[in-house]
Amino acid sequence: MAKRISHKGSLCGVARPLDAIGDWWSLLIIRDAFDGLRRFGEFQKSLGLAKNILSARLRSLVAHGILDTVPASDGSPYQEYVLTQKGRGLFPLLVALRQWGEDFFFGPNEPHVMLVDKAKHLPVRRLELRAQDGRMLMAEDTEVIPPAQVD
Amino acid sequence: MAKRISHKGSLCGVARPLDAIGDWWSLLIIRDAFDGLRRFGEFQKSLGLAKNILSARLRSLVAHGILDTVPASDGSPYQEYVLTQKGRGLFPLLVALRQWGEDFFFGPNEPHVMLVDKAKHLPVRRLELRAQDGRMLMAEDTEVIPPAQVD
DNA sequence: ATATAACGGTTGCAAACTAAAACCACAAGA
DNA sequence: TCTTGTGGTTTTAGTTTGCAACCGTTATAT
Image (cartoon, rainbow over the protein chains, first blue to last red):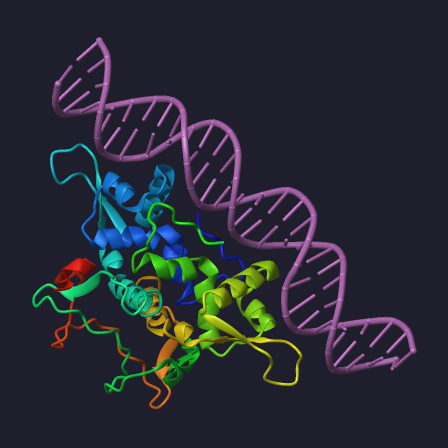
C-alpha cells in the first residue's frame, strides 16, 4: 500500500510521516474527521471517492494508528472511525496546509471558509515558527543538524 | 497529472494545495530545496527516485509556481530549481510534518535530525495555533465557518 | 581532434496502484 | 416479501510508477 521507499532503510523525519499520510485522500479524510465525520458513508458522501478507495484508505489510516475504529455510538451495528491522539496531532499540519492554500490558491477577494476559534468567533492567527527565546524564524533562519551533533 | 478531483468544481482550502503537493515525492523535493539543493542531479542523488519521475515532479512543481527554473548559478549551462515565494510559504507545513513525524514515528530515544535556529543553535519551538488574543488553540477549540457567514 | 564520461533529461515497457461499477451481506422499513 | 440504505469486497479497466536503456549536450582526458 505504501509507496515503498526503497533506497534507505530508515526514513527521515519528513519521509516517515509521508508514508502514512502522503497520498491525496488521506489528509482529506483526516480533515473530515476533524470536522466530526465518523461514518464510512459520511466520508464517502463528503469526499465523493470510490468506496473501495475509501475502504483501503480507512484501513491504512487505522493500521498507521491515525484512526481508530469504535463499535458504534448510536444504535447502529456498524463501526465508526475516530482520530487517535496521533491523528489529532496532525492538526497543526492541517492548519498549515489550509493557510498556505488560502495564501496562494485563492484570489484576493475569492471567498473561502475560515478557521475561527469557537470562543470568540475570530479567525485564528497564522502559524509561526519561533525560536526558544521567542524570535520568529523564517526558513533561512533555521538549519537541520544531524543526530550525532546533538552534543 | 493531478488526481483530478472530479466531484466539485471548486476545491476547498485543504484540497487545492493537495492538488499541487499531494503526492509522495513533491514535499520531499521541496524539503531538499529548503536544504539548498538546486540541481536535478542533487535531487536525484538525495532522494534516489527514478529520473523520469523526478523530471515529471519538477515540471509539475514549476507549473504550480512552487519552484522556478533559473538559468544557472555557476558556469554550467544547465538550469537550477529554486523555491518561489509560494514554495517558501510551505515552510510551516514542512515543520508541522517534521514535528509530527518526530512525535509519533520515532522511539523516545531514537536519534533523529533536529531543526535548530541558526543564531543560537537551539531547537525551535513547537508550532502552536493561537487565537487573536494569544490563547493556544486545540483542534476542538476551533471550527470552520463558510464564506457567506463572515458577517 | 577524438574518445570518454558526466549531466539532464526522454522513451519503452512491465509491474503496481487507482478507480468506476457491479456485486454482496446485513438490517430496517413498507 | 420486497425494497431501500449502509458498509463494504470483487472485478476489471485505466493510470501511474519505476527500472533500464537511450539521447543530446558539455566538460575532461588523450
